[in-house]
Amino acid sequence: MTARQRGTLCVFLAAVLYSIGGLCIKLIPWGGMAINGARTAIALTVIGLYLKVTHHRLRMNPWVLVGSLAVCGTNILFSIANKLTTAANAIVLQFTAPIFVILFSVLFFGKKPQKLDLITCGVVLGGVLLFFIDGLSAGGTQGNVLALLSGVSYAGVFLMNDMPDSDAISSVFWGDVISAAVGLPFLGYETDFSGDTLIALIVLGVFQVGLAYILLTEGLQTTPPVTASLVSGIEPVLNPILVAVFYHEMIGSIALAGAMIVVGSVVLYNMILARQSVGAAPLDGSPSKLM
Image 1 (cartoon, rainbow, N blue to C red):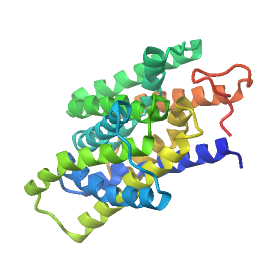
Image 2: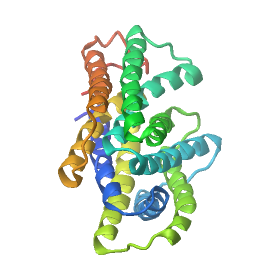
Image 3: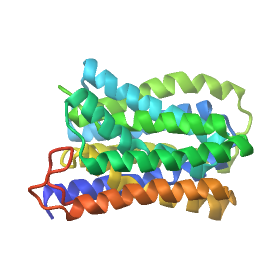
């Protein structure tokens, strides 16, 4: 297995772990800020142990700070959005991240988009509009907006390794520090500390945040950001399935159509890039083959 293949596998496994977030957040009867504060505090133990085992020294500079704010924003926005809209809406709207990766690559790294990039952006935005149409009738518009904003911050997470003088795992650590510091005070408003709640919280902290971010940062070392964000397409598929099976929360018909458009167009985009010749490099300037 090549370094590129190992990196892609790490990103894929991270996405699988991220997909349990919607269900666990739904099962915990707390507010989004309290959940995020507690899960990131637990994750810090996992990430701290990883840093010690790998002898990786923490760093801090302006670009590491930008990355940490992207991590923090993604953590907080996704947690709150899951409480204000359906898990399916939250994850699919967050999955607009590849579009923002393309946009930020153009704006901040001067990478010219291909025609395919622009077409995909347009189709995805059309699918997103359907979520807001459904949200107006279901009362989930606020959650939909926050979920879409989490897609913006999630794009910053995928771009961490492309930032000058960056250190992705340091950004993840400091992002979780900020998340925990902001969220832990909200635990004072919670009263349910049952065994089921604590187990779901531990699963979130250890696996959905801690281990998943470690795998993602490892994968991003050899996987370009656009490719990584697209390989993560398993997350918006598994997330609502787990919630529907174990929490019995179903997605609205209009939002379902939007989900099919968003996920389908991004997956199709990924397949087209994978079949392009190596000489026709995608936006990130890397060979288009994923595996």
